[in-house]
Image (cartoon, rainbow, N blue to C red; front, side, top):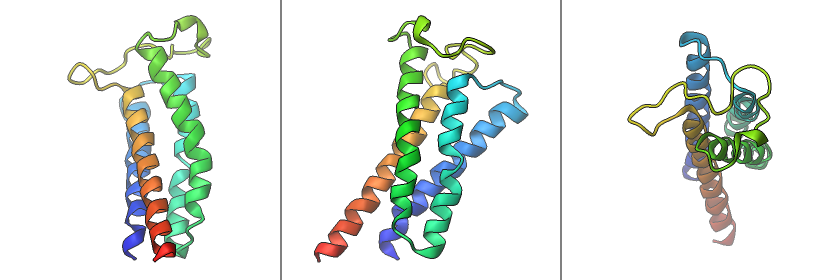
Length: 141
């Protein structure tokens, strides 16, 4: 059971990220931009995938989670590049609704909604990588 801790950690991060995004939109009434929606599409299904994998002790769930994680991670990187002005706003897909670069929160001068999403995806990626390494070590031993 010791090798399963990274999947538990990935599930915990996905739960916190999902709860946080719902808190921002439903409690704080901050409308999500188009890129935020794409990241939610990648994040939310990670919860049942990882939970089922843990319950059934199916290591393949890490592969399924990675299929959602990678597009979410790429979208989060792209969103942060837009948000911090590395990419021009003219390449933003946010043509209707709220802009992908609008500053809705900025805690301590650097914690933003796009950066929180990026951190969530990076942490889940690190957990899945740690799980893969522990699984590989187990098969080599």
